[in-house]
Length: 68
Image 1: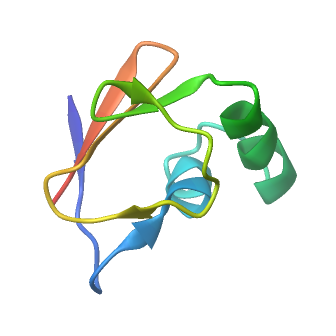
Image 2: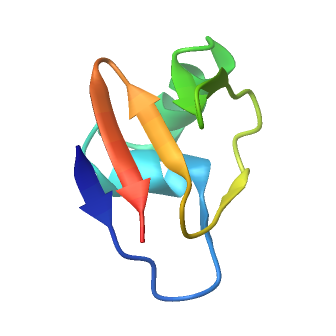
């Protein structure tokens, strides 16, 4: 499991996917989310701008990141 430290209160799900390098651009990030390929805290998430806070876990393609 990787960790990602946020600088503010939260990071949006589609932004995290881009920062983690799981896709090349924002459009691809949104497509991954729309297609139900991303889970937040074990549940498929369809909200592209879901605000992730400390303690959230995001999973995609057998990769897991914990927000710190």
